[in-house]
Amino acid sequence: MPEWMTLVVATRNPGKTAEIRDLLKEFKVAVKNLDDFGPMPDVKEDGRTFDENAYLKASFAARILGMPALADDSGLLVEALGGAPGVHSARYAGANANDAERCLKLLQAMQGKSNRKAVFECVISIAVPAGPALTYEARCEGLIADQPAGSNGFGYDPVFFYPPLNKTFAELTMEEKSRVSHRGKALAEFKAEFDKVLIWIQQQMPVPAIPRSSSKSSANSAEV
Image (cartoon, rainbow, N blue to C red; front, side, top):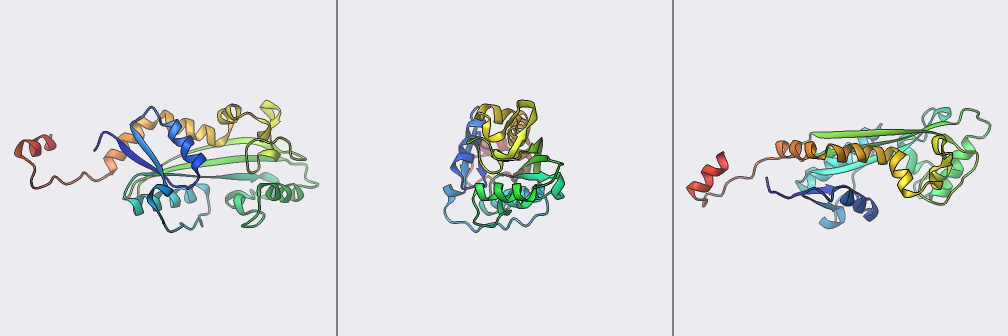
């Protein structure tokens, strides 16, 4: 395998790509995203779990591009709502709804409910073209606030209250959130084991064929 490896982040989100690139900057990995490869068909995220959806995105990109690929899927599970919005977190208030509309629908659904327990869950999948994948996952427990608070973050952050810091996720600094959030913890575990991930990828990826024009000494060295 080459000394440097390309890892595709199966997203067109530049912020997410930059986050992964910064996370892995000490490793010999070239981090690219889907925009680096031109037009590609969209993958249908119809999995029943975050694990299934993360794998669908990662394995699809890996097969299409012939490179190892990473994808994540995450969402909010509210106990009083039977685990909703769950895998439908991004589409909870409709396909074209914005974050404020999703938060509003959630607060309306929680009216009159005394049980405010909720969990943010994130799953990261790293797949190779042949199909196998590694999975990292993490959770963060909290409560659904009575009303939105804070202007940082995105998604349901303004209504997800984190008791240990006595703030909603939208009131946390980026550094605070990266330490305690579901996504931050999953990424930290992924980074801590990335040396092993690289070895696993090298074992799973096919070895390039040796050109017929290679010299005898080159062939012998490749067999060692």
